[in-house]
Image 1 (spheres, rainbow, N blue to C red):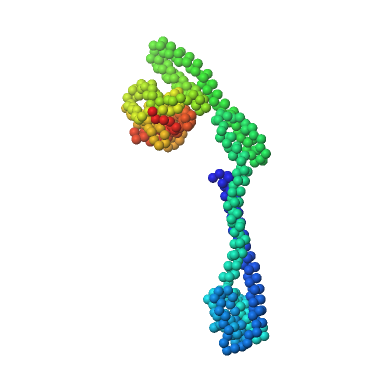
Image 2 (cartoon, rainbow, N blue to C red; image 1 turned 90 degrees about the vertical axis):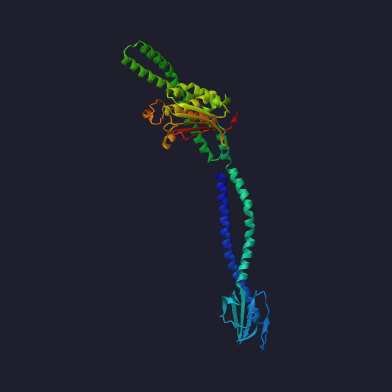
Length: 437
């Protein structure tokens, strides 16, 4: 939930709670004042009735009062002179003053006044008092309740206005390129925003320093190592040709394998340094994924044939807006891993799949597969499943999947690892925004 919505809801909740408490308090006050006024009214009515010139007669005067808003009895010397029709048949014995009792089938407020030989009983339904209190409080609170939606609009508007600097900062950060570490040049007067901008500018500076140090060190070191490694390769090859002793020849062969491994690490480091999204997206063009896959398979077919593995390519071609080098590197790394970790006489299947979520390039192998922990770590640099103690005995630098992840970021694609029906690993790369051929 956004800060704007949260603040609006909090303020509205506080306002509604305040209105509710005011309503309860107002109801209580209205009841108290209403009771005082109506009690005074009963006293006045009793005072008027007690002065009425009524003579004692055989039949009491009965007054019909269907609304039952006010009931009374006038007694003299224990004889009923007059009263409401619902009360004339019963003499009600109450002490003088106010009391609340059940009279004529309902709860009533009763007032008794005596003067000389005359006694007046006046009763009023309690419901009348509640209705009066409700009418008073509703008339006072209803305008406030109607104002709540209008206040909600005003609160939402002013909260949005107050948070406008944060919205502007968010949009400015969202529009930045991944390699843009320039400071935010924005003069603000809000005391809450100033430290945020200062901290961000400081963070940009530190991240830029670390980014450049890592990027250029790896690429420069790899580039500088290329020349001496090439020279070592040539010298080892020449020495191997001159050696007649088998043991010396084996030592040179082991040295040659070590140099080849080191050369592979250097090449992978150079590729890793070059796979930056903004660098490649400028030169994108339409690429056939099927054609690139066939080309990569043909380049690595000698390794497949050497291990007597079977490989198949299934599905229909699709075209992606991309770069041939990065796509070739992506597919080559994934295929190379499948070849390495699939045993002799194993099986590899490559599929081009279309679905609701886009078009996918998928590879299945019959290797040993991975645990969930290994799947989580596989994209870390220099991490290898099982290290050099892997049952396959294959050598590697542990950079292939890190490069794959970099290329995935270039295309805004996604990669998913799962257990393969063949017994090994399934790697599925899904591209969005592509078109079928």
